[in-house]
Image 1: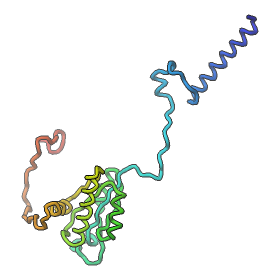
Image 2: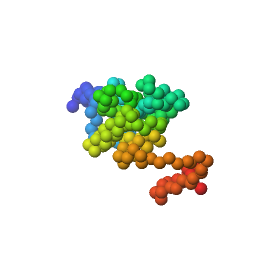
Image 3: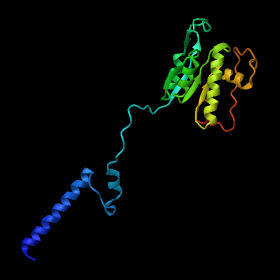
Image 4: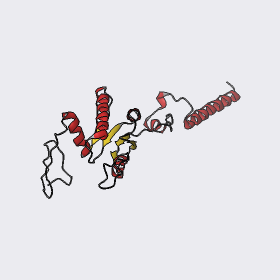
Length: 204
C-alpha cells in the first residue's frame, strides 16, 4: 500500500470521527447503545410536545352563590341578586384552582352545563335553608352523586350552611337541625386515634 493511500485513509477516518462528534453534540445523530453511559443519557435532548395553550391544566371549581347582595341583614331580599364572599374565592384560588360562579337562580340548563365544565363544587355558608336556593343545592347534590357513582371523581366541599343543607337532603328531614346556644362556651377538640398532630399547634 502506497504512502498516499495510507494518508488518504487516515484523513477519511479523521473526517468520520469529526462528523460523529458533531452529530452527537447537535442531537441529530444516532448514537450506538455501546457508546451510551450515564452522563450522556442525562445530557441527551428530550423531545416533548409543547403544552396546548388553549387548555387549562389546573382544577376549575364551581362556587354556588347565595341569595342577597351580601349586606348584613339583607340576605333574603327579593331582587334576585346573589353573591359569593371573596374569601371563598381566595380560598379556592390559594390551592391553585380557578373559580366559576354557579348562580343559584340561573336557568337549570345553564347550571347543568356549568357542572359539566367544572371539576368540583363548593357550598358556602349563609342563612337561607328553603325556597329556590334549597332546591338548587339539591339539584347540584344529585348531580354530584351521579358523577361519583359513574366513577367520575367529582368532589363536593360544604361549609357551615352548605353542610347543614346536605344533612337535610340526605336525611330527607327539613327539621333535623336543632338550635342551641354556644356563646362563650369553650370546648375541647377530641382527635381520633389516627390523627397526626405532632408538630402542629394542637400538639401538647
